[in-house]
Image (cartoon, rainbow, N blue to C red; front, side, top):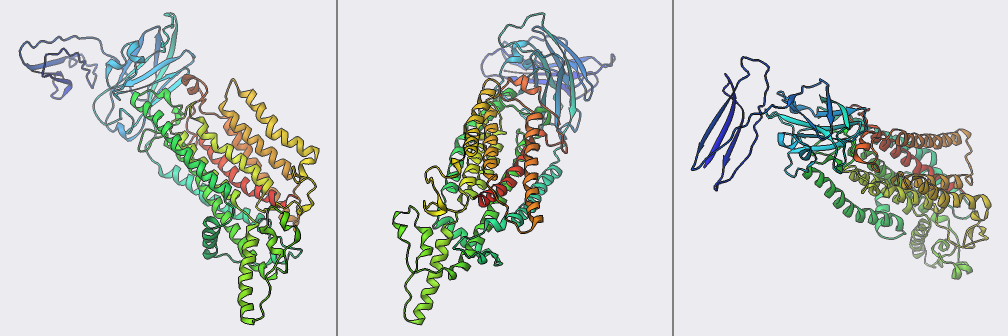
Length: 624
């Protein structure tokens, strides 16, 4: 049989609520009907119940009970919860409610843990066990909070915020999963509903792009102007005049480097390995993070992901779009850096071609037999001159090409490219991590920070010039290197590579293990730069030019310190703490009502790493 039940307001034709039951076999159903609108008018406050049914042995029971209190927009409501009591409130959405996000905020002075749950079904929030129950029907959202918490309903949340006349029920009760909450424990909560983000993405996204991309290009042009001479110098013999020749780079020169030196020959170890590691790690990381986020969506349990709920801006899915898109800065800066490394390599290639005709020699040096790197000594040898003038000219061209290639093989930009790919992957992994941040996924965010720190050390002490011959540079200690024989260098080496990482590990072992990797990486990089910078000699003929280089380095350091200060002093979550304690650090959006302080950390740290890459390459080229 079937049963149709409708609830009407007296004098109104539209039902306030209804239900339909149709079962092929006898079954007993219990369904609650709640009106979608409330009235205080005593003359019209009567309700009419209409029941239509057909079937053998059909029976039903109607129970009338007091409904939930109503809450309105922008009106704070004081709530007192105690023991196992649950306070339930009903919100009747007005027309046009779906054109903005709806923030349901609970604040309190008490640190007693409590639950905030939102559903369109009263039975999900009316008693303690329903409040704590995981809902797999995608009909409710729940989170725990101590001093503050917020659930954001939007057009893409599950359940979604629509212009439907169906009401929302909000339940607040103490968190009692362990069953040890005393009846005397209580909590005073202020509940408030506000409309927030209007889905306007144009302004924040345009500002993010045009500050990251054009400003990044301007910064890179300025860095190229300051450091290009040192990074493109070709050292062959005693003649340095060839380095002063003006060279014009065309797209063909860039394409030649891409074809010949990216995919044909030349060492590309670090660049290739960085790409391989990033892609392999990305596959497993995405599967893990997506599974965690999908579980949160299915259960409606917002405690699975440590979001900054007070600055939560969605787009096409129920994800923190603002926190994820801010990582675009890393990706843009990584690509810009790759282009400038390509330009530097193309210029070195052109300079090698221009210097090749001036290379003289008739034989290879005798010590080539014992040298582990023979390519760099081909410049000191030669090819016998043919007697035929035509053959001599043709042979000279081939010889120039040969010497140019050999000269170019001495200069490897593999680590520079790896640094740029590291920036790109840092942006991708940080985006993936903020898809559903938690204590189990923090390593995806800091993984490439560790790789970038390692590349920093490699770039500082290897540079772009390969010089592996023991007899070159008057190296007295070919195994350890003469730099590390000095006591101060040894001290800095152990300080940056051993003492500081262990120190950070011990300090944060019992509080925030996730930050050990980040702080240790920063410490290792800074100490490595300082150790190498003291060997750097300024050879500028123009004092103003040297001052500009120093100003660029100083400004890079200031940005790094500012980024670190924002990260440390203005946290928005704490993934090593409990979900309710982590929400105590949630903060409102501070930039265009879209970005929070952690987004600013992404922006500043990206610029610091981007500018630092030029500084590191310059220091490695100037140090002796």
